[in-house]
Length: 446
Image 1 (cartoon, one colour):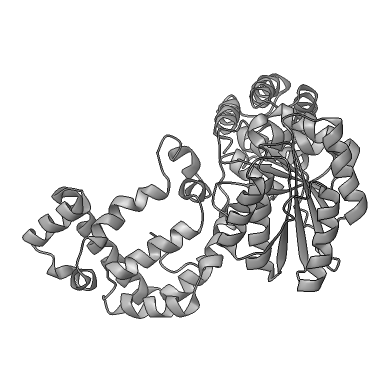
Image 2 (cartoon, one colour; image 1 turned 30 degrees about the vertical axis):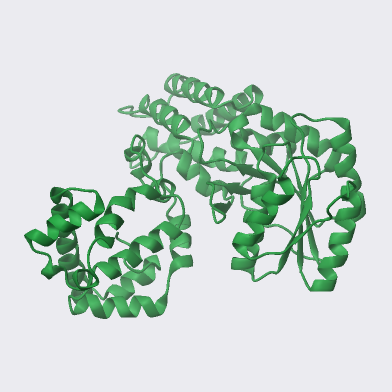
């Protein structure tokens, strides 16, 4: 995400490389490039100008320490200003109420229905809640069916009324049903239009008045850039929503919405959607996002994702196998599956400092493991358990069965053997459980 903006900002900092101190001249050149980078990312012109003016004021007011290079100081100042621009700190949703009522708003195509499913899934898995999804979009073809399909995948009930064309009544009845069935969160998916119109605004305003929601979340497609900010302002003027959800942040987004929307509507960004999967939802942390924009990675989020997949019993079992050098391809498959559960692979790797730029032109997704999995699944159970059995004829059979070639099979076997030796050394010398306690991810090196 924000790859183009990150590259442009990095080039602007290069102007200070080799400079002995910050001066009004070299700051002016750097800030001109930063402003161009922000405008190219579709950030509002006034916001971009205010941002660079603030950076200039702080940069020229700094006494550069001997140990700090001007370029490094400028990066820190820009990071601090980015954090402030995006809201300063993360803001939780209000889960009070019995039940909690969350109203989703936004234009058609912004991703409201999908995000409603993601939010329900997150609240169920991470908060132990019992959400009820409400099909309030009575206009878009297949909207109700889409919500039901999503709900079935995550094991959450859906309230809908076939034939009822009054979304206000549906919302009222859904809350009564939630109280009866013991659902403690009600997420109301509402209708959108291709553009803002009075009927849509009146309808969602009426729903708000009747259900008195704890949270109104405005869902916006981050790929629409400055248009998203203008739409957010109009919705906020009518609904006074509580927070913003940026969807499709994993796409070819320029970042303008994320950087501008907080300043325009003075409402926090609460969540971001980073993929198609129902677990591709993250709480928005301004400081972490600023780090990623500046190519610094996001280790905290990476560790949090790893913690979600951490299994203490599995870690102990793995440690014993490593110590005895009996780690096999069945164990390897488990590690691959745990990494895949952490989310989009390219997004996960980009959280490692310095890796975002390195991975820029690489086609890295869940399919990256496909040929490895194909090779392993083409082995017999005995071969997976004991890779030493795999001789020349077996390698040919595995290659034919997996649609690869002998060279790829040999390469995987060699890499596996070297990795197993290295992991055995680590487990014997440094106590691997303590290492994994830091990352909270068994076998996290794969």
